[in-house]
Image (cartoon, rainbow, N blue to C red; front, side, top):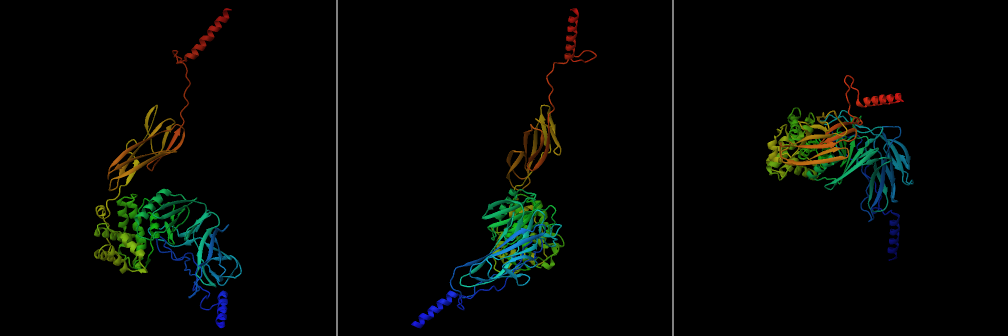
Length: 604
């Protein structure tokens, strides 16, 4: 009995000391890594960027362990623009440990330049070891803001930059520091990473913007959209139009992988040699050039958003789907929203019929020419979508295949893609899909009637333009005149009338709103038109003050100059003509008065 008591006491002391072998062994990470992302990032247009990428693995407690509470290591990376060194970003990694951590090694991204340490010492070029004594140790390094890649995709730009810093701002990939550690005691140990900006800026999951900016937000369909607008950005679209387009895409894409938050940067394009029009990274970060619009088949805002909804793992056989689906849905959703006509949509997808991309085999990336995944890919995706809708009486669509891919566990093969098409429609449609994706067979773009049969009629779409007859007139006390819309000048006090024509160039009846604005004054006319129907509306405004004005009528902008009126003449007696002289009566009256006074004076 006594031996049992003594043994229990010894065991208790050993447990308190944390040295019971096999019960509370310290944990060690199997491997660690650092880089500028945890996984390869889809560029959005072209091959995935692999610059500075690396895997990051953290430590876990050995099994079995004593029952204990969860603990957490906090690692914060603070980014700052390096003074007087444009193109170089400073990052400071600081770590806060629980008391149970006995060893810690930070693995920095390759290629960085360490400038300062506090509590860390170098083990090799990337690994820095904690001294075990310093509270909140730090390591500071610098990395190049510029990341370059060659791009030759259909939406590639003239430059090579994916990320960069200018004198005023920076858009960078957030560096990822790996870690390994040992700790005593039981329970789980986790690593919590966070990123901050020293100064003005904002961070997402994988991207950061450093500089002065404005942030706009929009919530729709359980998603929060954050739009970062740098002071130097000049948006071609209003934030409201961008949000409306993404709102529509979020609602229509019922394919899973819906992130709680989407982080977007409107990248300034003036003077910057970007390689692409947009870039998506991580699961929900993206930047899009500030010149990009939402009323084109390319719609880069939607294209990059579709990338945030892709959660599958491809093989070479299914790699085509990533860019093909983003390109196809960007065009289709923009058509459905009424921002482009069917003719624009048709011409855009029909590019896949042309050589050399039409001869490519989508399941064989080695055969791709002229970016076949961007050109032939969306045509094939669209044809599969159309066939699924026809086979199921529009009860299913390509979105069902997309959703199945996102739910797939493991890598996707061509056979599995075919199986998911069969599940969404029929074996016959799946056979046709397999032919288009695993051979050089190319579908033919469908016409508007075929589109209507499968997708429904194209939605109403309206054009607003100045009327062909008397589009701009000015009226006043002196009558009415016709003005030139390119160089309109009137006199203060005149009224300008703008005559607008609204035409429905879509396929169904729909309602429209035609806005008119001058300065702080605005009004709206509304109506409803069937396909090919048109209506006229007039807007009038009186300009009492001289100056320069801008008239906006349905997107038509008219610059107007208002000149001051000439000063009105004072009231005077009616002129009396003296034959041969034309002397005013007032002059004659004065002269006669002088003569009369002179005669009276002479009589005296």
